[in-house]
Image 1: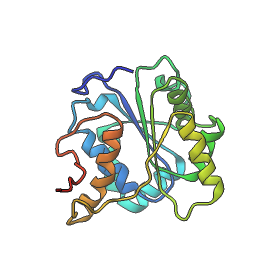
Image 2: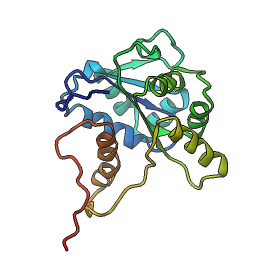
Image 3: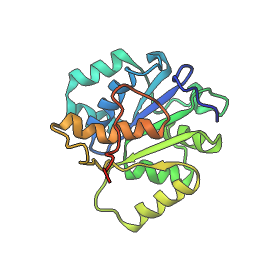
Length: 199
């Protein structure tokens, strides 16, 4: 799939499910606003539990900001353009991704808009990135991750790194969110660079 280097014309979806880690989704959305992708080309979907966890972890003002800035779609509405393979949306990032959402995607159970959109991304060979957030993992979780990976998706766990010596929580979160943007081929200012070891 051809990706424009300046992000113009790109359309991306951020889905937020009920796993803890709403701060990752919030920071990711804010970083997307600093790319060349226009806000009207960034869609947001909350699962029912994702909405509750987001408000609980970040508060109502953050939720209102997301609803004001982005077009938020109902997770039970299958009449949304990106629920179809003919859609021009090219990337779906699920952050955080619960193990229940992972299981539905791995099993091909398109019971809601998030799972259906993930199914579309896989069948159309577009980008699907799942920022999983669970610990410890059982064998079912691991098998589901392998199934999604074999189908063409990318599993990117919420595993912060410390190479850049982050000085606060925002910098620590950036080691994950900017990695996700890199995997999505979305360029953004201040893109996180892996530490280069001197010889």
